[in-house]
Image (cartoon, rainbow, N blue to C red; front, side):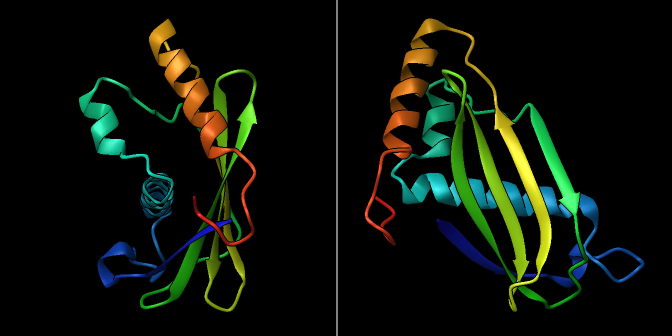
Length: 136
């Protein structure tokens, strides 16, 4: 499972002294992009080619709040849903392993046949069996 470590910055917190709920979307997106890069998929290069991997649904369950300077990590796992769509199962854990957020962003089916074929082949490649601890 892919894991990305981060730390809370002061400006990400609201007046209550906790990470604002919208900031978690940024954490999740950054982790997804790093996951793709670790699997040799460049999100920016895809966008330049007109291949858009857009989230159409984001289920987010907030379990507890991160605070300034907390160290945490985000896990990312891809799960196929149907022929083309995938769900990124993502969790945010405090450094001590406490679950803070559980999320399931969904990347939709594509709009053109060419994009569908591209996505099917890449999703198959990303979801292929691997040795434990291997990103590739």
